[in-house]
Length: 261
Image (tube, rainbow, N blue to C red; front, side, top):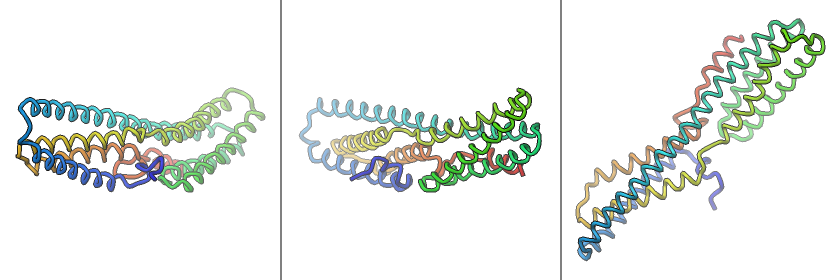
């Protein structure tokens, strides 16, 4: 039985290769079936077949475009959140330098630990154990930072500089939750299965039409199947920015780590 996240648990390249093979098989089956019945089809049936082919290919193109747009928007959201979070952490660190000792030194140390925890969060990939560990470390440092903020506010409740420090710290905590939610916000798996079904049906109809006409260009069939498979691979890769060829850049967080040292 397939698990609920079957497509997300497998390697996207292997799935795309399997889809490519499936499309070629569907085309071959359609071609052989069309060749067997081609001589018995009347002209009206051939015209209807052309209409069905156009409608199916149009539906597939619509689904591919829709799915790509969904995956790309989610990828961009995650990329933007990384930059936002690194900026918020940097602001928190800079404003902590206005605080009195010993809070200033302790908060600077905690901020450095926090950056390391956020990089570990991304590097964990799809490993649930590592992810839970990184999230637990993140939340632990958050609690320590907040304890420091409360201690500073109790000692010096003035809005400057204490209030200026607490504001970006709130943003840091919120962005952690947003990034974790964005990580789980993927293109619905049902849409990906629908893509596979529509692509298989389209290739089957194209093969059937070629069989009816007793004429097929194998090179064109392979190119179309390969192109569709690569588009689906790109959609799945964008949908899994922690694993694959297209990954969310962590450069802003890495640069922040270097600057804090």
